[in-house]
Structures are given as C-alpha cells and as structure tokens.
Length: 325
Image (cartoon, one colour):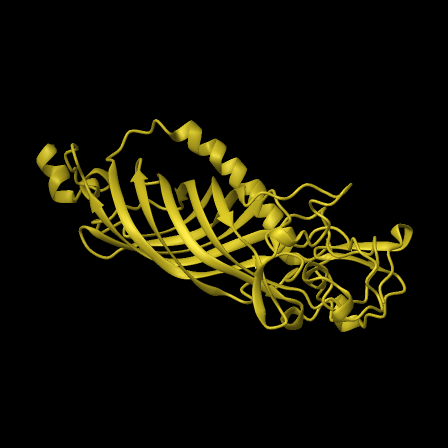
C-alpha cells in the first residue's frame, strides 16, 4: 500500500510515489519522471511555438497573394495524464473535424477549426498503479485558432511549390465530460465528487469548459489547382488536471471496507477500497494534455480577390528574361 510521505516523495507526471514503494526498475523507467524525453520535448515545442508566434506577428504584413481554404479532417485523439503519464498514442480513438484556413502569403497562414474526439485512460492498460484501478473516457470538442509557419514556399495550385512541412501554435477552448465504468456500468464522474468536490471543506467542482494551447507540426501537399492534402500532429497544453477526473488525493477512509459498506460515489473514488484520507490519488502540479493527429483535405476558393501566378512571381524563365531585355 502506498503511503503519503512528502519528505521522501519523487515527482512524476501521474502522481507521487514514496522511496519505499515496491516498484521494480522496469516500472520506474516508464513512470514519466521530469527527465522523461517525451515531456522535455513538449516543453521545448511550447517555447519554440511562442517564439514562432512572435515572428508571425512581425511578418503579418508581408505582401503576397492571399487565398482561403475550407476542409475536412479525420484521424485520432489521445490524452496524457494520471492514467497515461508518458506513452503517446496509447488508447487512441477516432476523431474528426472541419477547418477554415486563410493563407496570408506563401509562408504564413491562420486556421480556425472545430475538432471532435474521444480521450480514454485506465490503470489496467497503463500498468502504472495496479492497486488504483481507475478509468475514464471523455468526449472532447475543441474550437481553436492557430497560426502556421511553412518551412518552404507553398500554395495550392503551384507546380513548383507544392510541398512544405509547417509548425503551428495557437489557443482554443475545449469541452469535455469524463465518465467511468463502475461495476460494469458507465457513470458521469464529475457529479460524484470523487475527490471530495462539493463536500464541507472540500475543493470546488472543476469546470467542463477549459482553455487549451495547441502546438505541433504537419506537412501540406498541393494535389491539384484547387485541392490540397495535409497531415498534422499536435499536442494541447491545458490549464486543468481533471480531464480524467483525477488530480489530488483520496478523501475517505475506505481501506478494508467492502462494496456493501460504501456508496457508489465512494466506490468511484477508490474502486479497490484500499486507501485512506490524504493518500495520493493524482498529481495536481502537472496538468493534463491531449492530442489530435489528423489527415485533411482542403479546397481553395476566392471571393473578391484576383488570382496571381505565384510560380511566375517566384521564378522567371530565361525566355521571359530575354524578352524583358
């Protein structure tokens, strides 16, 4: 049984463990410590995205042909948190969405999108805390705006600039509602107050609408004069630790009790009935993340703008040069 002893704690993404915890080395290698390469990479991507956003604002006035796109996306979604501290693409579920993209020039664009996916996690699949046996699933709906920086010149319809990787960053709002399986039946977890929310002296209920910060990479390809294809993978940094309904500590002394002795809400909080008040259930210092990995198709259109030939603007043949001379 894990004990809550602050002086001897070692911090990891999904919670706390004590120095006396009976974990073998193979478990410790996968607990997602601060040195974990996955999260070090995410922190680096976040800083790079902020820097690129600054560059975007400086370059926003660049003169160039402008165009718009509307498109459809499909792919998968997953989450990182207490029930999956550090394994990207674990429990990936189908996702879909629509988007509008405004191309400011051949290097810069902004996008507004709406994505819908499913986030899922469970102790029995992650195998980090076998004595906890918590699980969750949540439908997530995201509305976000993001800026994109193409590594190379790119626009749909070009024969010369038809492929480019890109990086993006932005801000969005997402809605979620965690559910859990208890004795074979699915229940909403938030109304149960699994960490004492709503009780006297307990924490406040968390909100089901939160802010997120998308950041990631992708690639664009011009398929024809009016059609483009794309692939992107983006992480979402959030400001909540309750996507999975797990954040702090147990709030009831349930160790040694039987299912007949407890309420449904108490069983949702501690399915193994092996923990007491104050024992660590999650780690509120690290917020939850989620991700969308999508493939897209988009269609270019113009409303009041005359199309220019950027291929000629970027490159002039020897024949055209001699004609000018």
